[in-house]
Length: 425
Image (cartoon, rainbow, N blue to C red):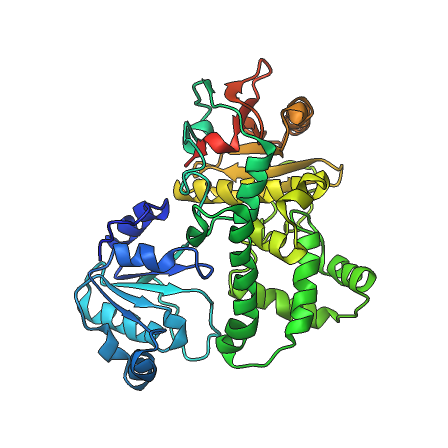
Protein backbone atom coordinates (compact mmCIF):
# COMPACT_ATOMS: atom_id res chain seq x y z
CA UNK A 1 0.00 0.00 0.00
CA UNK A 2 2.36 2.72 -1.28
CA UNK A 3 2.22 6.00 0.64
CA UNK A 4 3.46 9.16 -1.07
CA UNK A 5 4.69 10.55 2.26
CA UNK A 6 6.59 7.40 3.24
CA UNK A 7 10.12 8.13 4.46
CA UNK A 8 12.50 5.33 3.37
CA UNK A 9 14.03 3.18 6.12
CA UNK A 10 17.26 1.20 6.17
CA UNK A 11 15.21 -1.93 6.81
CA UNK A 12 13.44 -1.61 3.42
CA UNK A 13 16.20 -3.46 1.60
CA UNK A 14 16.09 -6.38 4.03
CA UNK A 15 12.29 -6.55 3.85
CA UNK A 16 12.45 -6.97 0.06
CA UNK A 17 15.27 -9.49 0.31
CA UNK A 18 13.54 -11.62 2.95
CA UNK A 19 10.16 -11.54 1.21
CA UNK A 20 11.84 -13.09 -1.82
CA UNK A 21 13.32 -15.89 0.31
CA UNK A 22 10.63 -16.69 2.92
CA UNK A 23 6.91 -17.31 2.89
CA UNK A 24 6.42 -14.71 5.62
CA UNK A 25 8.39 -12.17 7.61
CA UNK A 26 7.76 -10.69 11.05
CA UNK A 27 8.89 -7.11 11.72
CA UNK A 28 9.39 -6.68 15.47
CA UNK A 29 10.27 -3.62 17.49
CA UNK A 30 9.03 -0.93 19.85
CA UNK A 31 5.71 0.83 19.40
CA UNK A 32 5.73 3.99 17.28
CA UNK A 33 9.05 3.24 15.55
CA UNK A 34 7.45 2.93 12.09
CA UNK A 35 6.87 -0.83 11.75
CA UNK A 36 3.33 -0.52 10.44
CA UNK A 37 4.20 2.15 7.86
CA UNK A 38 7.15 0.12 6.57
CA UNK A 39 5.12 -3.09 6.45
CA UNK A 40 2.24 -1.28 4.73
CA UNK A 41 4.67 0.18 2.19
CA UNK A 42 5.67 -3.35 1.16
CA UNK A 43 2.20 -4.97 1.30
CA UNK A 44 -0.73 -5.20 -1.13
CA UNK A 45 -3.47 -5.82 1.47
CA UNK A 46 -3.69 -5.42 5.22
CA UNK A 47 -5.66 -6.13 8.38
CA UNK A 48 -5.24 -4.27 11.67
CA UNK A 49 -6.02 -6.27 14.80
CA UNK A 50 -5.98 -3.11 16.90
CA UNK A 51 -8.66 -1.39 14.79
CA UNK A 52 -11.55 -0.56 17.19
CA UNK A 53 -14.14 -0.57 14.38
CA UNK A 54 -17.12 -2.85 15.04
CA UNK A 55 -16.05 -3.45 18.64
CA UNK A 56 -12.66 -4.75 17.49
CA UNK A 57 -14.24 -7.09 15.00
CA UNK A 58 -10.91 -7.84 13.27
CA UNK A 59 -9.48 -9.19 16.51
CA UNK A 60 -12.65 -11.14 17.28
CA UNK A 61 -12.60 -12.69 13.82
CA UNK A 62 -8.95 -13.68 14.22
CA UNK A 63 -9.69 -15.25 17.60
CA UNK A 64 -12.65 -17.23 16.26
CA UNK A 65 -10.99 -18.40 13.06
CA UNK A 66 -7.39 -17.24 12.47
CA UNK A 67 -7.23 -18.62 8.91
CA UNK A 68 -10.04 -16.28 7.75
CA UNK A 69 -7.98 -13.11 8.24
CA UNK A 70 -5.19 -14.50 6.03
CA UNK A 71 -7.14 -14.07 2.79
CA UNK A 72 -6.12 -11.07 0.68
CA UNK A 73 -3.68 -9.91 -1.96
CA UNK A 74 -0.08 -10.86 -1.17
CA UNK A 75 2.01 -9.74 0.59
CA UNK A 76 -0.69 -9.32 3.25
CA UNK A 77 0.04 -7.23 6.35
CA UNK A 78 -1.23 -8.53 9.69
CA UNK A 79 -0.58 -5.72 12.16
CA UNK A 80 0.09 -6.46 15.87
CA UNK A 81 -0.28 -10.21 15.37
CA UNK A 82 0.66 -10.90 19.02
CA UNK A 83 -2.84 -9.74 20.01
CA UNK A 84 -3.97 -13.18 18.75
CA UNK A 85 -0.95 -15.53 19.17
CA UNK A 86 -2.54 -18.50 17.28
CA UNK A 87 -2.15 -16.40 14.11
CA UNK A 88 1.53 -17.36 14.09
CA UNK A 89 0.73 -21.02 13.55
CA UNK A 90 -2.01 -20.17 11.07
CA UNK A 91 0.49 -18.23 8.95
CA UNK A 92 3.08 -20.98 9.24
CA UNK A 93 0.53 -23.59 8.17
CA UNK A 94 -0.63 -21.51 5.18
CA UNK A 95 2.98 -21.05 4.07
CA UNK A 96 3.58 -24.80 4.36
CA UNK A 97 0.50 -25.57 2.31
CA UNK A 98 1.12 -23.13 -0.54
CA UNK A 99 4.96 -23.12 -0.66
CA UNK A 100 4.90 -19.54 -2.00
CA UNK A 101 7.36 -16.79 -1.08
CA UNK A 102 6.42 -13.35 0.22
CA UNK A 103 2.88 -14.12 1.38
CA UNK A 104 2.65 -12.32 4.73
CA UNK A 105 4.18 -9.46 6.70
CA UNK A 106 3.49 -9.65 10.43
CA UNK A 107 4.28 -6.76 12.78
CA UNK A 108 4.61 -6.98 16.55
CA UNK A 109 5.52 -4.61 19.39
CA UNK A 110 5.76 -7.36 22.03
CA UNK A 111 7.09 -10.89 22.19
CA UNK A 112 4.27 -13.07 23.58
CA UNK A 113 4.68 -16.10 25.77
CA UNK A 114 4.98 -19.40 23.91
CA UNK A 115 1.47 -20.30 25.06
CA UNK A 116 -0.69 -20.54 21.94
CA UNK A 117 2.30 -20.74 19.58
CA UNK A 118 3.00 -24.36 18.73
CA UNK A 119 5.82 -23.98 16.21
CA UNK A 120 8.84 -21.70 15.95
CA UNK A 121 8.17 -20.92 12.30
CA UNK A 122 11.80 -21.65 11.43
CA UNK A 123 12.30 -21.71 7.68
CA UNK A 124 8.86 -20.22 7.05
CA UNK A 125 8.72 -16.95 9.02
CA UNK A 126 11.83 -14.77 9.16
CA UNK A 127 12.18 -12.23 11.97
CA UNK A 128 13.45 -8.71 11.30
CA UNK A 129 14.18 -6.21 14.07
CA UNK A 130 13.16 -2.58 13.59
CA UNK A 131 14.32 0.23 15.83
CA UNK A 132 13.67 3.98 15.97
CA UNK A 133 15.13 6.08 13.16
CA UNK A 134 18.85 6.67 12.84
CA UNK A 135 20.09 10.19 12.22
CA UNK A 136 20.54 9.30 8.56
CA UNK A 137 16.95 8.10 8.24
CA UNK A 138 15.59 11.21 9.96
CA UNK A 139 17.64 13.51 7.72
CA UNK A 140 19.97 14.68 10.51
CA UNK A 141 23.07 12.98 9.09
CA UNK A 142 24.53 13.92 5.72
CA UNK A 143 25.44 10.29 5.03
CA UNK A 144 28.78 11.28 3.53
CA UNK A 145 30.52 8.32 5.21
CA UNK A 146 29.37 4.71 4.79
CA UNK A 147 29.90 2.52 7.85
CA UNK A 148 30.14 -0.58 5.66
CA UNK A 149 33.01 0.92 3.66
CA UNK A 150 34.60 2.33 6.80
CA UNK A 151 34.67 -1.15 8.35
CA UNK A 152 36.69 -2.25 5.31
CA UNK A 153 39.17 0.60 5.86
CA UNK A 154 37.77 2.70 3.01
CA UNK A 155 37.01 6.39 3.58
CA UNK A 156 37.57 9.58 1.60
CA UNK A 157 38.35 12.56 3.87
CA UNK A 158 35.63 15.21 3.70
CA UNK A 159 34.55 18.35 5.50
CA UNK A 160 31.25 17.71 7.25
CA UNK A 161 30.47 21.10 8.81
CA UNK A 162 30.07 22.20 12.40
CA UNK A 163 27.40 20.77 14.66
CA UNK A 164 26.49 22.63 17.84
CA UNK A 165 26.18 21.02 21.24
CA UNK A 166 22.60 22.27 21.44
CA UNK A 167 21.74 20.47 18.19
CA UNK A 168 23.14 17.19 19.51
CA UNK A 169 21.18 17.57 22.75
CA UNK A 170 17.97 18.22 20.82
CA UNK A 171 18.55 15.06 18.75
CA UNK A 172 18.98 13.01 21.93
CA UNK A 173 15.87 14.41 23.61
CA UNK A 174 13.77 14.07 20.44
CA UNK A 175 14.85 10.51 19.74
CA UNK A 176 14.31 8.53 16.57
CA UNK A 177 10.50 8.45 16.69
CA UNK A 178 8.98 9.24 13.27
CA UNK A 179 6.14 11.15 14.94
CA UNK A 180 8.64 13.59 16.44
CA UNK A 181 10.23 14.76 13.20
CA UNK A 182 9.98 18.51 12.79
CA UNK A 183 8.85 19.18 16.36
CA UNK A 184 10.70 21.55 18.72
CA UNK A 185 12.59 19.79 21.51
CA UNK A 186 10.08 20.79 24.21
CA UNK A 187 7.17 19.20 22.33
CA UNK A 188 9.24 16.24 21.11
CA UNK A 189 10.09 15.34 24.72
CA UNK A 190 6.40 14.61 25.38
CA UNK A 191 6.25 11.56 23.09
CA UNK A 192 8.79 9.27 24.83
CA UNK A 193 7.20 10.08 28.21
CA UNK A 194 3.76 9.13 26.88
CA UNK A 195 5.28 6.06 25.23
CA UNK A 196 6.46 4.72 28.58
CA UNK A 197 3.12 5.51 30.25
CA UNK A 198 1.23 3.67 27.49
CA UNK A 199 3.48 0.62 27.72
CA UNK A 200 3.36 0.37 31.51
CA UNK A 201 -0.34 1.08 31.91
CA UNK A 202 -1.57 -1.01 28.99
CA UNK A 203 0.91 -3.22 27.13
CA UNK A 204 2.45 -4.83 30.22
CA UNK A 205 -0.94 -6.29 31.15
CA UNK A 206 -2.12 -7.06 27.63
CA UNK A 207 1.06 -9.05 26.94
CA UNK A 208 -0.05 -12.00 29.10
CA UNK A 209 -2.99 -10.68 31.19
CA UNK A 210 -0.94 -10.65 34.42
CA UNK A 211 -1.24 -7.73 36.84
CA UNK A 212 2.13 -6.30 37.88
CA UNK A 213 3.31 -3.53 40.17
CA UNK A 214 3.86 -0.65 37.74
CA UNK A 215 5.25 1.58 40.52
CA UNK A 216 8.11 -0.87 41.03
CA UNK A 217 8.56 -1.07 37.27
CA UNK A 218 9.00 2.71 37.20
CA UNK A 219 11.63 2.48 39.95
CA UNK A 220 13.56 -0.07 37.91
CA UNK A 221 13.26 2.06 34.77
CA UNK A 222 14.67 5.04 36.69
CA UNK A 223 17.61 2.94 37.82
CA UNK A 224 18.20 1.78 34.24
CA UNK A 225 18.13 5.40 33.09
CA UNK A 226 20.68 6.37 35.73
CA UNK A 227 22.85 3.49 34.51
CA UNK A 228 22.38 4.04 30.76
CA UNK A 229 25.41 2.99 28.68
CA UNK A 230 27.04 1.17 31.61
CA UNK A 231 27.53 -2.51 32.46
CA UNK A 232 25.59 -2.27 35.71
CA UNK A 233 24.63 -5.71 37.05
CA UNK A 234 21.23 -6.61 38.50
CA UNK A 235 22.76 -6.30 41.97
CA UNK A 236 23.96 -2.80 41.10
CA UNK A 237 20.46 -1.85 39.98
CA UNK A 238 19.02 -3.13 43.28
CA UNK A 239 21.57 -1.15 45.30
CA UNK A 240 20.88 1.94 43.19
CA UNK A 241 17.13 1.69 43.84
CA UNK A 242 17.77 1.29 47.57
CA UNK A 243 20.20 4.20 47.87
CA UNK A 244 18.43 6.62 45.51
CA UNK A 245 14.73 5.80 45.88
CA UNK A 246 14.86 4.21 49.35
CA UNK A 247 12.95 1.15 48.13
CA UNK A 248 13.74 -2.55 48.24
CA UNK A 249 13.30 -4.89 45.28
CA UNK A 250 14.14 -8.57 45.33
CA UNK A 251 16.39 -10.11 42.65
CA UNK A 252 13.63 -12.34 41.21
CA UNK A 253 11.37 -9.34 40.62
CA UNK A 254 14.17 -7.37 38.98
CA UNK A 255 14.98 -10.26 36.64
CA UNK A 256 11.31 -10.75 35.75
CA UNK A 257 10.76 -7.06 35.02
CA UNK A 258 13.94 -6.81 32.95
CA UNK A 259 12.65 -9.72 30.86
CA UNK A 260 9.35 -7.89 30.33
CA UNK A 261 11.16 -4.71 29.23
CA UNK A 262 13.13 -6.79 26.75
CA UNK A 263 9.99 -8.51 25.41
CA UNK A 264 8.32 -5.12 24.97
CA UNK A 265 11.43 -3.80 23.15
CA UNK A 266 11.93 -1.02 25.72
CA UNK A 267 15.51 -2.11 26.37
CA UNK A 268 18.09 -3.08 23.77
CA UNK A 269 21.28 -4.13 25.53
CA UNK A 270 24.69 -4.37 23.90
CA UNK A 271 26.25 -7.85 24.23
CA UNK A 272 29.92 -8.38 25.16
CA UNK A 273 32.54 -9.28 22.57
CA UNK A 274 35.21 -11.90 23.00
CA UNK A 275 35.09 -14.68 20.42
CA UNK A 276 36.60 -12.61 17.64
CA UNK A 277 39.69 -11.74 19.66
CA UNK A 278 40.82 -15.30 20.47
CA UNK A 279 43.47 -14.09 22.91
CA UNK A 280 44.34 -15.12 26.46
CA UNK A 281 43.12 -11.77 27.78
CA UNK A 282 40.23 -12.36 30.19
CA UNK A 283 37.20 -10.39 29.05
CA UNK A 284 34.11 -9.52 31.03
CA UNK A 285 30.79 -10.94 29.91
CA UNK A 286 28.44 -8.17 31.07
CA UNK A 287 25.94 -6.56 28.73
CA UNK A 288 25.96 -2.80 28.37
CA UNK A 289 22.60 -1.35 29.42
CA UNK A 290 20.60 0.55 26.82
CA UNK A 291 17.10 1.74 26.22
CA UNK A 292 15.99 1.22 22.63
CA UNK A 293 16.28 5.00 22.22
CA UNK A 294 18.13 7.56 24.39
CA UNK A 295 15.03 9.77 24.52
CA UNK A 296 13.43 7.22 26.86
CA UNK A 297 16.22 7.70 29.41
CA UNK A 298 15.78 11.48 29.06
CA UNK A 299 12.04 11.16 29.69
CA UNK A 300 12.54 9.02 32.80
CA UNK A 301 15.22 11.34 34.21
CA UNK A 302 13.19 14.42 33.20
CA UNK A 303 16.34 15.63 31.47
CA UNK A 304 15.59 18.82 29.54
CA UNK A 305 17.92 20.35 26.95
CA UNK A 306 18.93 23.07 29.43
CA UNK A 307 19.48 20.50 32.16
CA UNK A 308 21.73 18.36 29.97
CA UNK A 309 23.71 21.43 28.96
CA UNK A 310 24.74 21.74 32.61
CA UNK A 311 25.26 18.02 33.22
CA UNK A 312 27.92 16.97 30.75
CA UNK A 313 28.56 13.63 32.44
CA UNK A 314 24.97 12.46 31.88
CA UNK A 315 25.02 14.00 28.42
CA UNK A 316 28.11 11.95 27.57
CA UNK A 317 26.37 8.66 28.41
CA UNK A 318 23.26 9.67 26.45
CA UNK A 319 25.34 10.72 23.44
CA UNK A 320 27.08 7.34 23.56
CA UNK A 321 23.66 5.68 23.58
CA UNK A 322 22.58 7.71 20.54
CA UNK A 323 25.69 6.70 18.59
CA UNK A 324 25.41 3.05 19.56
CA UNK A 325 21.77 2.96 18.50
CA UNK A 326 22.79 4.18 15.04
CA UNK A 327 25.90 2.00 14.78
CA UNK A 328 23.88 -1.11 15.59
CA UNK A 329 21.26 -0.36 12.91
CA UNK A 330 23.87 0.49 10.27
CA UNK A 331 25.96 -2.60 11.10
CA UNK A 332 23.06 -5.04 11.01
CA UNK A 333 22.01 -3.71 7.60
CA UNK A 334 25.11 -5.32 6.02
CA UNK A 335 25.13 -8.48 8.12
CA UNK A 336 27.61 -7.35 10.78
CA UNK A 337 27.26 -7.98 14.52
CA UNK A 338 27.39 -5.33 17.23
CA UNK A 339 29.10 -5.61 20.64
CA UNK A 340 31.14 -3.80 23.28
CA UNK A 341 34.48 -4.85 24.81
CA UNK A 342 35.64 -4.78 28.42
CA UNK A 343 38.45 -6.78 30.00
CA UNK A 344 39.83 -7.30 33.50
CA UNK A 345 42.77 -4.97 32.80
CA UNK A 346 40.27 -2.07 32.70
CA UNK A 347 40.48 -1.71 28.94
CA UNK A 348 37.20 -0.84 27.26
CA UNK A 349 35.97 -0.30 23.70
CA UNK A 350 32.64 1.49 23.42
CA UNK A 351 31.51 -0.39 20.32
CA UNK A 352 32.76 -3.39 18.37
CA UNK A 353 31.47 -4.30 14.92
CA UNK A 354 32.28 -7.78 13.67
CA UNK A 355 32.05 -8.10 9.89
CA UNK A 356 30.54 -11.22 8.29
CA UNK A 357 34.06 -12.37 7.35
CA UNK A 358 35.13 -12.40 11.01
CA UNK A 359 37.26 -9.25 10.95
CA UNK A 360 36.35 -6.75 13.65
CA UNK A 361 36.49 -3.00 14.08
CA UNK A 362 36.84 -0.94 17.26
CA UNK A 363 34.99 2.32 17.94
CA UNK A 364 35.39 4.88 20.70
CA UNK A 365 32.63 7.49 21.10
CA UNK A 366 33.39 11.03 22.25
CA UNK A 367 31.16 14.08 22.40
CA UNK A 368 33.83 16.78 21.96
CA UNK A 369 36.73 17.11 19.52
CA UNK A 370 39.13 17.74 22.43
CA UNK A 371 38.68 14.10 23.47
CA UNK A 372 39.76 12.59 20.14
CA UNK A 373 43.47 12.28 20.96
CA UNK A 374 42.87 10.35 24.17
CA UNK A 375 40.30 8.08 22.48
CA UNK A 376 42.69 7.31 19.61
CA UNK A 377 45.51 6.50 22.05
CA UNK A 378 43.26 4.14 23.96
CA UNK A 379 42.29 2.27 20.79
CA UNK A 380 45.91 1.93 19.68
CA UNK A 381 46.95 0.66 23.14
CA UNK A 382 44.31 -2.07 23.11
CA UNK A 383 45.22 -3.06 19.56
CA UNK A 384 48.90 -3.41 20.52
CA UNK A 385 47.99 -5.44 23.61
CA UNK A 386 45.96 -7.93 21.58
CA UNK A 387 48.51 -7.99 18.76
CA UNK A 388 51.30 -8.89 21.21
CA UNK A 389 49.39 -12.01 22.26
CA UNK A 390 50.27 -15.01 20.00
CA UNK A 391 46.60 -15.99 20.06
CA UNK A 392 45.38 -12.45 19.54
CA UNK A 393 43.35 -11.17 16.63
CA UNK A 394 43.62 -7.36 16.66
CA UNK A 395 40.96 -5.05 15.21
CA UNK A 396 41.21 -4.32 11.49
CA UNK A 397 39.93 -0.75 11.80
CA UNK A 398 40.10 1.84 14.61
CA UNK A 399 37.61 4.73 14.63
CA UNK A 400 36.61 7.57 16.91
CA UNK A 401 32.98 8.58 16.47
CA UNK A 402 32.66 12.22 17.46
CA UNK A 403 29.84 14.64 18.06
CA UNK A 404 31.46 17.99 17.37
CA UNK A 405 34.18 17.31 14.80
CA UNK A 406 33.75 19.26 11.55
CA UNK A 407 35.46 16.71 9.30
CA UNK A 408 35.84 12.99 8.61
CA UNK A 409 39.50 12.06 8.18
CA UNK A 410 42.25 9.56 8.91
CA UNK A 411 44.86 10.55 11.46
CA UNK A 412 48.59 9.96 10.89
CA UNK A 413 48.42 7.08 13.41
CA UNK A 414 45.82 5.36 11.22
CA UNK A 415 42.78 6.03 13.42
CA UNK A 416 39.69 7.29 11.58
CA UNK A 417 37.64 10.17 12.97
CA UNK A 418 33.99 10.39 11.85
CA UNK A 419 31.19 12.69 13.08
CA UNK A 420 27.98 10.77 13.88
CA UNK A 421 26.12 13.38 11.80
CA UNK A 422 28.02 12.27 8.67
CA UNK A 423 27.47 8.53 9.02
CA UNK A 424 25.11 6.14 7.21
CA UNK A 425 24.87 2.41 6.59
